[in-house]
Amino acid sequence: MSKTIVLGAGIVGLSCAYYLIQAGKTVAIVDPSPEGDKASFGNAAGFAVTECIPAGVPGLLFKLPKLLLDPLGPLFLKPTHVPAMYPWLLEFQRSSSKRRVLEIAPALAALNDRTYKDFAPILRDLEYERHVHNKGCLVLYNDRSSFEKDRFSWDLKAKHGVKFEQLNAHEVRELEPDIGPRKQFGVLQTDWSHISSPKQLMDRFLNWVKDQGTEIIRETAVALEHSERDVSVRLGNGEALTADDVVVATGAWSKSLANSIGDKCLLESERGYNTTFKTPGISLSRELLFAEEMFAVTPINEGLRVGGAAEFAGLKAPPNYERSRALAKLASRMLPKLQTDTGDQWMGHRSATPDSLPVIGSSPKVRGVHYAFGHGHLGLTQGPATGRLIADLVLRREPIVDVRPYGIERFT
Ligand SMILES: Cc1cc2nc3c(=O)[nH]c(=O)nc-3n(C[C@H](O)[C@H](O)[C@H](O)COP(=O)(O)OP(=O)(O)OC[C@H]3O[C@@H](n4cnc5c(N)ncnc54)[C@H](O)[C@@H]3O)c2cc1C
Image (cartoon, rainbow, N blue to C red; front, side):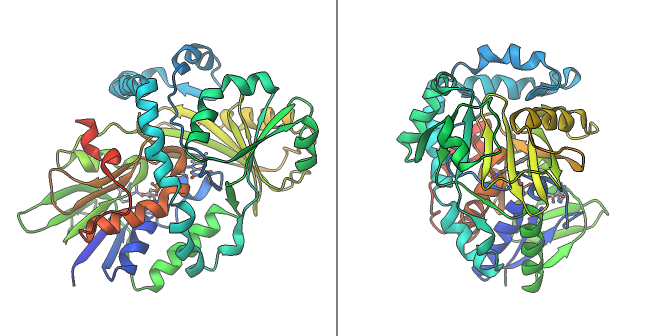
């Protein structure tokens, strides 16, 4: 029986493994720390199916100087890292044109459209269905005029079938009484859900995959190699594992593996921070997004998770937990009764492409190598759809969604 090696045991790698196992493939997973503390374990828990607008939109470049001035603000570029990310920044600028945004939005929407369908069998097999809370997501603005400034994005979402309701200050508080007076306008995105705990989901997922007899190899993949017949993965211990197909699902760490067989891509770690307050002193029913301040608050099993930030400082710089503290301070301004004394801080690497589209597809250079990374802010939402598409590619079936917009070829 032909064998597939999946590199990475985050939500994307496990989703690939899931759909490959369902298709009858023998799968082995390589990950130095499969029980993990990476993005898939510490994210904001949202099935963000409404988010089809890329990070770069027309007009953003004019806002950048102001955003960058605040060292603890929502966006930070470490000065010494900027030269290394120059090609990425240039492509980000190109991708922010109206023409590109109008091409990117349908490609993101096509993946988000599959979220519930492709999550359904996984949630059933993990017995996790009751942990999906279909409460929507409340986006909060200072007032209606600040909402109007985001009109372009909201109109584009509506064009792609995203449902939302505009709420006045009274209606906002009827839904969530603990929101303070600073926010006078809200938008309820009804199709969004949040889960009880990303960590709990991931623990169950890994156990399920192990129960199917999947081999878990606790090693780091350092390079891909290939012969005419097959591909192999060089591990950190020097050993090489050979397979018919290899799936690269190593999140923000994927670039060097693609580079090792000559596939170029633009990928950065977009570092996010959060604090989970065990006894927050307030109770929310749904995820909140603070539009102007760019952070999220989600009620999960572990407490109230307050998170956000986009810090570009590479994979190796130590975390700057001042950012978590700044987010907590901001949150207590918006949610005045929030108690911020007992929080667990965390930093994770989002794998970010300059056009906000993930990389999903087969290598144009080496047959049998497939890519599944670059999901940025949407890896939990799009992981299962990615897994399904990768299984289609490995089985040489017609993919359920046209994968051309996600191909790694776009970077060459
Ligand atoms: C603060 C924050 C909030 C977020 N909120 C949401 C949200 O609400 N909804 C949403 O959809 N998404 C959200 N995201 C994004 C989402 O968490 C990520 O897109 C997703 O977890 C990426 O999954 P992944 O499997 O690609 O990567 P990861 O979870 O990073 O997993 C990669 C795995 O690869 C392994 N690995 C790395 N290098 C190697 C190697 N060389 N060899 C073998 N294994 C290797 C790592 O150990 C890790 O286990 C958020 C992210 C952050 C940071």
